[in-house]
Image 1 (cartoon, rainbow, N blue to C red):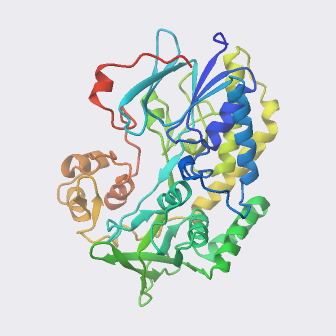
Image 2 (cartoon, rainbow, N blue to C red; image 1 turned 60 degrees about the vertical axis):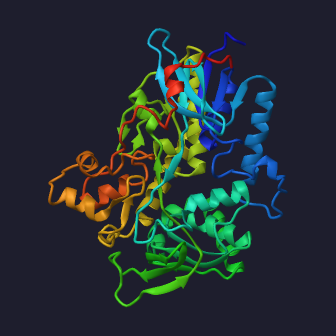
Image 3 (cartoon, rainbow, N blue to C red; image 1 turned 90 degrees about the horizontal axis):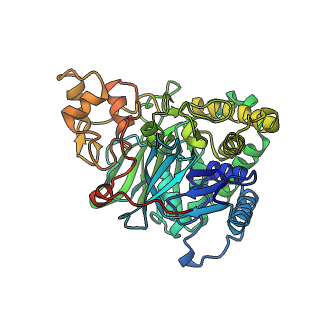
Length: 467
């Protein structure tokens, strides 16, 4: 067993699971490293085991997919083919020139103070994505959370962000978030979507080729209608109001050019706002390894290989595309890795069906990106006193001054002049907003570590664990 090639998979969402299972089924020893307590990623997140929650009574989309993934993972774990390291937070992946392998450095446990290193012959980065946050006046009030954050609270901890919730922003995620909150007992006061029906109709040909996705969307829409939630399309949140926490939001309609329509504002009382404007890929580990990016995505070839030998990437890290695309990419990557580690050249014909599905799903996600684009004037609507970087308390006015009066021509110079992006999140949250305010293209910043690391872990690198 120790002589078998060893693959480290970072991330146990759909892409990571599919890649790990495909490689393990072909004789590769796999260590699956994930920060969560259970496999599945955000889409298959389940209540913490300590809550002893019962299975939801109504069948949900993708339940069968998760059952298949879970059962296969259990079989490979029992057979010694896969080691699943839960609650392990990867902060760096290091290439080892002497051996040609890799060291995956992790922090173990809730406190993230104990270091663990996993050595492997190859690495699959299935690091997923994170939500794009576009600031607006009042967005830092208690009770304002991201749409994905509200979903994680509900799925993982069975906690509502509030009793009366507004779900707002743009993107396919808003439907399941609103439906889940309504089913859990929250009153969804409004579902505010900046995209309009006409934009969806224009992509009807692309939608027609994906009946499963249409059925999934219809399922969520039916659940919302059951609870009396009707979407406000071509609308956006203008401001959140409150003293100690959010008490209401102002929403307004958008005209055909995507700008605020005069005289259409209305105030909606609520005690929570779940807002999201799409996703961005997690690329920190790929950048540390020197992988090339295409815009914000990790660049890969038809085998899901990056341009760094021994490193593959799949799922949202290579471009936001949803769980179905992540599964297909993970499967292709796992098969490619197994062949390469066994010293053979993979035959693309063995995953021809998966490659065709990848092409269709990628085209579909590209079409969705054009539909679910943020309102064009979102940056102009930020008042100068709106906080942009919460970590360093930098306002929109300070960013505008850096770009205008002080002549900053790129995001890095704005960072040096204002400290925007120098805080705990290292610009992950405020980066898109700073780029929008300054007119600079948003590009991920290369960082040596993917998360904060205790000095003790850096001073005394841990011995590799036998996995």
